[in-house]
Every structure is written in C-alpha cells, then in structure tokens.
Image (cartoon, rainbow over the protein chains, first blue to last red):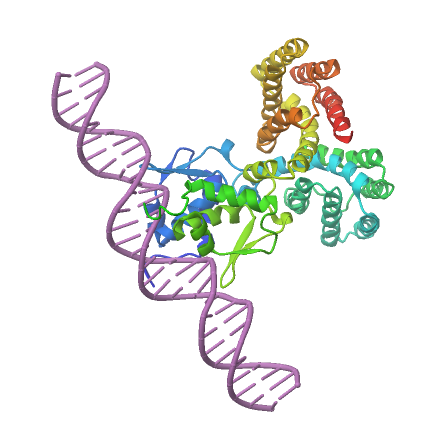
Length: 232
Length: 232
DNA sequence: CAGAGCCAAACATCACACCTTTAGTCCTTA
DNA sequence: TAAGGACTAAAGGTGTGATGTTTGGCTCTG
C-alpha cells in the first residue's frame, strides 16, 4: 500500500466527493485546485486524480488549464441535465431548489410526452398503461402509499418511453426522483386525491384510444395540481 | 515525436471521434474495444487513451470492464441530454431523427418556460424581450433571414433564462441549434409567417405584463406551428 | 514606461512496471 | 458425467518518474 497515513478512498469516490462539493458551493466558481492537492487529499496517484478530474470536466464543473490548475466553473456552465449533476444537486444544500427546477421540467415535458405517447404507443403499452392506472387507483384508495408511488413511477416511465423520443425517455429517472421526492418535500398528500386518480385514468384511456388531444388535456389536469402544490 | 508513422491526433479528437462513431453506429452496442487498440489507432499513450475513455464513459456511451475491455453501450443508456451527445447525434447519420427529438423537447419546454418567464422576468429582461420581438418583425418583414434567426435565437434564449430555472436555461443552446437547423431540414419558410411574428410579439408583451397565462397561450400558438411543420 | 525575453509552475503526455479482477479452461471428484 | 474448484492469462487499474508544452508573471533593457 502506497500511503497508509492518508485515508484512501474508492476510485469513484473522488469525483463524487468533489462533484458534490462544487455543486454545494464549497469551491466557489473561479477557485483553483491542483492535481497535487487532490493527490494529497485523497492519497492517490496522479493517474487517479486525473481520471476524476476528467469526469468533472466532462460535466462542466471545472476545466483544467496549464500553468494554472483546475478552475471551478460557474453553475451556468454545468451540465445540469446530466444524471450525475442532478444527483449532486439533489444531495446539496439547495436540494429544494433543484427539486423545484426538476418538477418544472417534468411538468413541461410530460404534457407533450402524453400527447406523443398517444400517437406512438404500441398495443402492449396501451394495456400496461391501463393496468397501471387501475393499480394506482386500488393502491391509492387503500392508502398504500409506498406501493402507490412505485406504480406511479412505472406509469410515468411507461408513458415517457411510449412516445419513442429518447430525450423524453431519459427524463424517466428525473420523474421518478421527483415522484419519490414529493413526500420528502411535503408536496404529497397521504392519500392521493381522487382527481389525480381520475386524471391518470384519463391519460391512460386517451393514450389507449390514440387520442393525443385528450391525453394532453388530462395530463394538464395532473400537472396543474402539481404546479399549484409548488406555488403554495 | 514518439511515432511519426501513425497519424497523431489532437487530444480531444479521440473522444470526439469515438463519440461520433458510437452514436453513428460504427460500433454496435456490445462491441468491445480495448485500450491497446485505441493506442494503436490514434498513436497515443495509455494515459491519453484512458482519458478519452473516461469522457465517453461519463456520458454513458461505453463502460470498461476488467479482463474484457471497453464495452459499447446501447443508446438507451446514453446521456442524451448532454451537449456533447447532442452534438454527436446531430452530426450522425440520424441527424434528422435527433433534430426531431430536440424539436419536440423544445416544444415541450418552451410553453412552460414562457409562463415561468412571465412570472419571474426582471424589468430589463421585459424591455429586451419587447425589443427583440420588434427587431424580429422588422427583419422578418424585410426577409433578412440570417439576421432574423439570430434575433429569434436571442429572443428564445432570453425567455428561457428569464424564468430562472437553470435547466430551462441549459436548453437555450438546444433551441438555438433547432432554430438554426430548421432551414437545413426544410422546416423554415423563406419569410417568417406573420402569425409567428404576432405570436412572438404576444409572448413578449405577456411576459412584460407578467401574465403567465397569456404568455403560455401565445407560446402555444408558436409551438403549434412548429408542431404542424414537424408532422408534414 | 513599454515591450521583449526569460523563468518557473502546472498540466499533458509518455513509458514502464506492477496490481487486481475475472472469463474461461482444465482438472478433480463425487 | 456433471458439479465444482483451482489455475491462467487477458485486460483494465494504479503508481512513478521523466519529459514536453503552455503560459502567467517577473525582470531587464532601451
């Protein structure tokens, strides 16, 4: 072992730790790190330090400059859509802010995604969608909240994927995160509102009926509720 | 110079080249590369090869596995929202498909962004927005298409930024790409339609008036045109 | 005081050695 | 003969030292 005196860390931990720190504002934009300092701090070799930096660099959290070092970049240059950055933000002090932004993004995308799904869904997807809506109703009415959320996530993921747009599909994880996080941020009633259940039903039926307009309309109902919860 | 026989390439070129190739389907999902092969092909050392791999790995295009090599991943695991991946897709054989997806994303986000901007814009932004709408009308009516597109991009970027949601703001480049690309993909009339100009005006005024509902309504008009052009 | 030139810092790259994991093979054994 | 364990070699992972390259900043000069 090279250096027993320093707490060695797992390989991925370095970019994880630094990523969180930067997002958290521990290193302000413009701050300069050096490879040497990372080697010291984490007790690793240049190779590993460079690897970690490369990852952060490819997400826009910093850039390396000769003769200078590793310069932390301002938030506006971050790759905020990247899953890693999203995760870091959700683990940061401003988790709530990140959560709100994600919710807005979700709201924006899902109305369109519903319409798209209605136009493109397969027969199988249509059935699954109806099933999930029914399951949600059952679980919601019996107040099995955890299971309800699981079904909810599956519902939304399926819808996002059914449209065939890979960028929408990529947001499935974001939506899952948001749906899970709603409880944490006090935006979730202990018992899903009947209107929400109806709306999910409506979306599922419209998608099964290949009716984009209706799908969008019901999704807008759903989304309106989320939006109003946000603004409270 | 280490090896004059092999065409050496600039440092970033490797991940660029490989990224494009993977997105383009040159390396099918499941295909295996090795560091050694990259070193050979690009005439670089292991360090550089590894750096490039790290970048691709952090965008989800491949993963490396001991004893196996570098495994190309299926498109569903790609970080499709990342600017690099977007650029690669837009340069690929399926540029048209990527462009459509981006347009749908844009459509989805911009209606919500308009409403958000109306709620959050600063006084300065309100003025700039009105100015840009006026500029667009002037340039549009005199058929100065290039300048018109520039103003159009500025308009949309400003709107996306005015809402204060960093994820929406991050889509400004995407929207710019889409607006520029419309001419390439034959989705742009040589002369902007008067309705489009009116709609931009309407959006700008609604945002200046801090009227989210109106902003959304006008943006939906704009977006409806884009959508119908898509479906032709 | 301006500009040329030099210096040193920090990343970039290379070469090489050794460690670690693990797919696949082969061999043993019940 | 099939299950399971031991061995092997392939490929990435990590560490190190040397050298290349860029460039901010200092110094020296006219």
